[in-house]
Image (cartoon, rainbow over all chains, first blue to last red; front, side, top):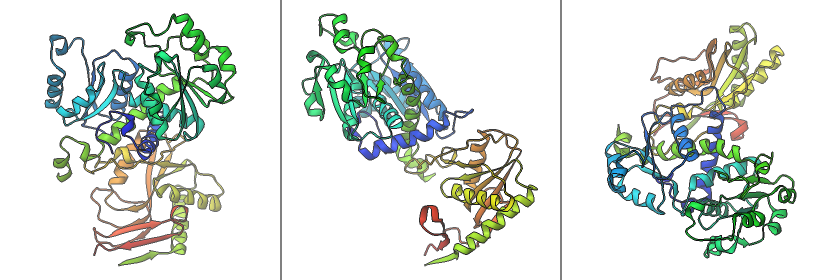
Length: 315
Length: 177
C-alpha cells in the first residue's frame, strides 16, 4: 500500500477499490454499539491543521480514535507557529515525538509534499491550497458506489468554483481513474484552463448537463480564495449555476446530489434542495469517517509503513 | 508433498456429528447462535446451521466475524492484513455463541475473536467448534467440538477447501519440505 497520500493521481484503480472495500468493513464497525477496534493501538496520529476546518479535522480525529490510535491535534493558532516557527521545524518536532502519521491541511499547495521530505511518518493530505483534497474525493467515490452500485460509466457533473477547488481536482482525477464520465460546469472564469488535460468535459451551461446526470456535485463558492472578481454578483452566479428546486426537477430519477460542505445555502444550492432525499450530504460525512479509517489502517497497519518498520518486523 | 486428510464424505460426517454434539451439549438449539470466523469459518457455520435445521427443525442465527482489526500481529507484517466482512445481525447478549473456524492452530485467531465478540455484547457462554485441530497452541485455548484431530509439524501447512469457495470439500496437509 501507499506510504503517503498526497493526491488521487497517485492511486491506481486497484488502490481505490482496496481502500473502498476496506472502508466497507469500517462502515460496519460504525454501526456497532462499541464503534472502536484495537487495530492501531500504540500508533500516534497528528492532525496538523494550518487552516480552519471542522468536518475534516473531526472526521480524521474520530477515524484515528476508532482505530485506537493516539491522536494529537495541532492547529497553527495557539501553537509555536504563532511564535514564528517554520513548517520544517514544526515537522521535525512532531517527528521527534514519534508521530506515525501526520494529517496535514495547509493553505499552500504542495506543502504536504514538502513535509514528506522531512519526516519518516506517513503524510496524509487533508487539503493543500487549491491543489488536492484526496480523502474527500475517496469518500465521495465511496458514497457514489454505495448508492449507485458502481462508478464506471457514471455521468458526474462537478459544478461551481472549479478553479479554486482542491475537491474538484482530486475528485475529477479519481473519477476518471475509475472510468466515470466527468463534466466540469461553471462560468469560464472559474474553469481552470488546463481542465481538458484532466480527461474531463467542460460545459458553461448547467441546464444542458443536468438531464443526463447520475451525480450532480455542487462546489462551494470559495470567496476566501478568490483574489479578484470572477463573476458579477452572487445573485447572478446563483441564478446561472445554483442548484434550485426547478433544476432538480430536470435531473433523472435516481440521480444523487452531493456537496463537500460547508454549504452556502442559497448560493450554490437552494436550502430545501440540500434537504431532499436524493441529497446525500450527510451520508458523505458519515462515510468520511469509514474511508479515513480505511486509509489510516492500510497506511499504518503494515510494518513497512512504520517509522520503525524494520525493527518491528524483526522483533 | 501434500496429503489429503479428509475428503468430502469425511467433512460431511464430521459436520453432522458436530451439529449433534452442539445440540446435545446445549440441550437443543434454544438461545444458540453460530458465528463463523471469516474466511471459511462462516461457510462452515452456515453448513452447521443447515444440519441443525435438518436434525432439530429449528433455525439458528448465523453470523460472520472478521477478526482482522483485533489481530495481535498488526504492524509486524509488511502489509496491513486483508479485511473480510463482519455481519452479526442479531444480539449476542445472553446467548450461547458457538464460534466456528476451519483450523485451530496457535489459538491467536480465537483470542482475537473473543475480543471482537465482546464488542458486540456479553454472551452467556462461548463455545468453539473447529473442523480440524492441528495442535501447537500458543495460548491456553481448546475447542469444544472438533471434526478431526490432526498431528502436524508446526511448519506444515493445513488447508481446508470448501465447495462454496474452492469447488470441493477437502482437508489437505502440505509439509514444509
